Amino acid sequence: MDTSVPLEEAQKVAALFPASSFVSVAEAGHETASYTQCARDLMAHFIETLDLGDTSCASGVETVYPAVGRFPLLAKDARPARSATSGNQIGIPERKVLTVAIAALLHVLKRIIVNNFSGDGPCLRAGGFHVEFGESGIKVALNGCAFAEDVVVSGTILANFDSTLTADLFVSGPGTRDGSLHVDGNFLAPGAVGDFKVSGDLGGHQVAVLVPEA
Image (cartoon, rainbow, N blue to C red; front, top):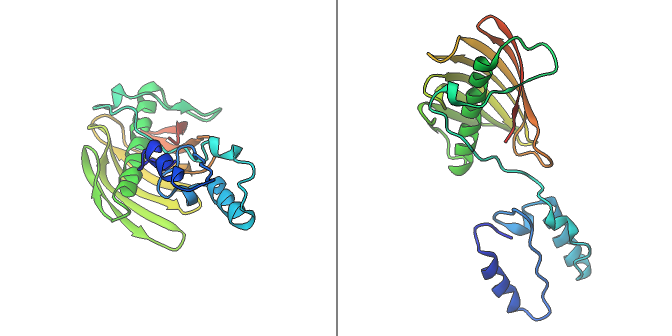
């Protein structure tokens, strides 16, 4: 179904066409017919054969869209990032800093989507971002961006059209020791939600943590 149109209204439209078939595509947005690979395949199969075929793929969620569940005012109120299997030298307070640093990154990417990729804008608590568009994706510059009041993030995000993402960030502020971070992961990738892999240095200690991509 198209989340911008109530399911009941779409069903009323389908009922106007004799012998019509109605398929609800889980978590689809606008336009439903091209929102997922499943929907595109069903549409092509119907045009070619006048038969829907197997519609079971429509009940699964192809892409999990990230949503912010917590808005900690200070880093100490955040949930800590998870330590990777080896190499991590930072404790829980620093891992909370990493959570809000990644939250700043995600908040900016979500704001860009909500703004229909219209360009520059503000971060949640402070700072702002600048967007440049390229052939393979977007490049986002963070300037003093704060998701929590006491952690400031600056640096560059590369969000590619194939859903891969990398970022090089510098964190500072009263809630953290200074540090440089590198982020690898995906944004709006089909399939199960994975983790951003965050490495680097925070206050002279090695960073190796995992933060959910959504």
